[in-house]
Amino acid sequence: MKRAVLLASLLVVLLTFSTAPAWAIPLTVEITPDQTRVATVLGGRFMIKTEVANTGNAPTGDVLAHLNVASMQDDVYVDPEDWSASRSQSLTLQPGESRTLTWDIQAVNAGRFAAYVVVLPEGAEVSGSENLAVSPLVKIDVETRSALSERGVLPVVLAIPLLLGLSAVGLRIRAR
Image 1: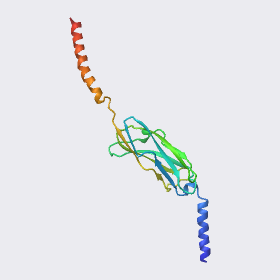
Image 2: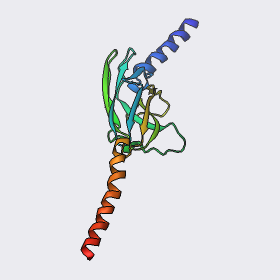
Image 3: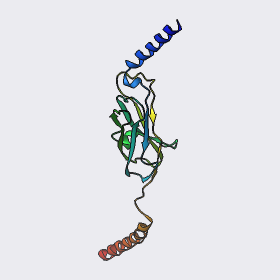
């Protein structure tokens, strides 16, 4: 009797996993960014590459890699769509296969931010209880960009009074 119950249980498990869609298999994906820190200025453009690798024994099925950008300060609003126009990439990986994804980013706010990639199952059969894979953070430090550098201040400080003085002299001469 024990043997029959054990065989029946084994049969149920085998049928469940053999007919399950690819996304039902636990997501065994590892995501590795090519860098851990980016320093740029407001408006600066840069690129982050992430390697997505299937470390499991089964194909991933259709998965979606999605870039997100979040502020590391509570007083800075971030709209990730402003940072990158193409934030999602679909892929399927065989066991042991990896792919390098490229993310073009532009800094639209000054402050401290984090970029990261989430890989999640894709398709109509996704129930919402599947596992996600999340990359380590890439810290992004964005400095404000000033129109003048320290070197450019002296000519402006000297030129403005000189131009005003020449204008005043020109007006006096013209008035006579």
